[in-house]
Image (cartoon, rainbow, N blue to C red; front, side, top):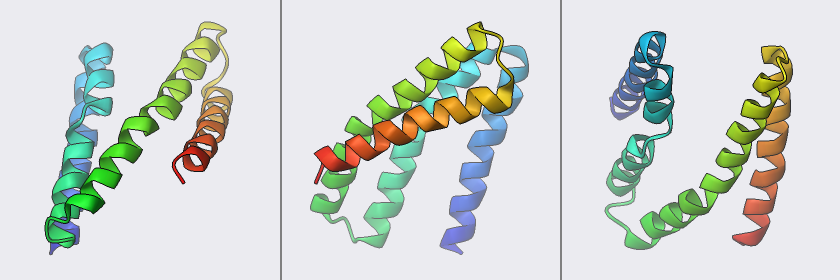
Length: 110
């Protein structure tokens, strides 16, 4: 039941961002990256770990520093779109940049 609730809420956020994106793409971008995802993970983590503050602090630290690879993803996407590259290439370049950033992220947080 808890897994189903997680899926429904997550899908709801994605669908809301998509629907809003039809009229207000910048607002949809803001919704897509807003802290609601992090807040949901903190809630689920708290429930599953019985409020373990160490686990939640570790998640918060990873999320905070995880912003940098995400910024890299969107920066590369923006540059690629400005160069009128096809979506498949934009996503490949963006995810490649994010992956490099994520690997560096994990190396520094160990």
